Length: 354
Image (cartoon, rainbow, N blue to C red; front, side):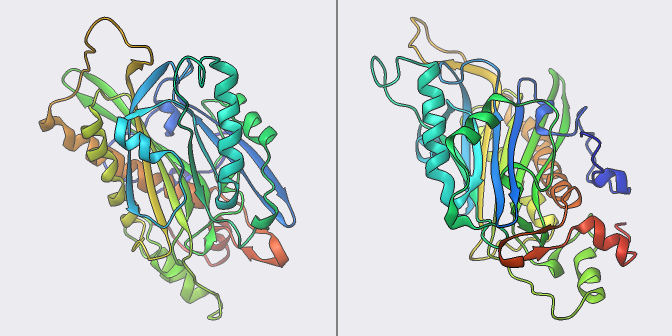
C-alpha cells in the first residue's frame, strides 16, 4: 500500500488462500487505520488507531474477543472485553508507558460523541495495546500526547503506511527494524465470501530465528554480519484480527488463537519477556447498546466451516509480520541506538528470500 514494497513484491507468497484487494486489515469493509508518527532523534514513537466500523462503536458494539499467548504485556480493556464479548471503542496501539495517556484521550473521544456515558448509562471500556520501544525511543519522556491520539483516530483510511510508522516507529523485530504490518485472506464458503484481516505491531524475536516462508533467512544474515551483532528478545507483539465472518464470541476466540501458527512460522519461540496479545472482532453483527424489546439474533457459521478461518488467520498473521519487517526503514534513535532494515541487509549481503 501507498507505494511501499511489501513481501510479495520480493517474490514471497505466503500460504494458499488469496489476499483481499489491499492485502490488509482494511479489506474488511468499514475498518480503517490511522497513524501519528513522532520521529526525531531521541523521540521514536507514535500511535496507531484501528476503527472497527464507521458508525458509533459505543452504540453499535461488535462481537469481540481477546487471547493471551504470553502475558508479558500491559494491554488495557481486555478484561471486560473477554467477559462481555463486545468491542465498544476504536483500538489504539502505542508504547508501554503511554498507555495511560492514550486511554485517557480515547475516553475523551468517546465522551464527546456519547453524552450519555457516565450520566444515563455506564462508563466506557477503552481498548489500548502496547509494545516497549525503549531501545530506540526515550520512553520515559512519554512523547505521545492526547492531540496525537485524536489526530490518529480522526484521520484513518483504508490505505495506510506500514513499517516504522505510528506505534511501530521505535519497534524492533527479529533484532531488525520492525513496526506495523498487515495482510488479509479471502474465505469462500457456500453461503458467501468473507475476509479476515490482520494488523500487527511487531517488536519481538532474535535475528537467527527469523524464517521467511520456511527459509532460514535470519541465520543467513547472522552469519553474513559481524559476529558481535547483538541479538536480544525483550519485546512483544500486538495482533489485531478483523473479520466480517458471522461468528459467536466463542468461535471468534477459537479463530484468533490460531494466529499463533503464523507467528511461529516466522520463527518466534514466544520467549519469557515477550508479550503476545491478540484482539479480534467481527463486523458481521452489531449489538445495540440500548436494550431492545426483542431477543437478539446472532448469525454464526457451523463449526465444520471454521478450519478455513483457522488457516486464514494464520496465513494473514505470518504475512503481516513479514510486511512489518520488509517495509521498515532503518532508524537511529535514543543514545545513538540503531537497528538495520531487512530490505537493506538482503540487498547488501545478496540474500535471497526464497
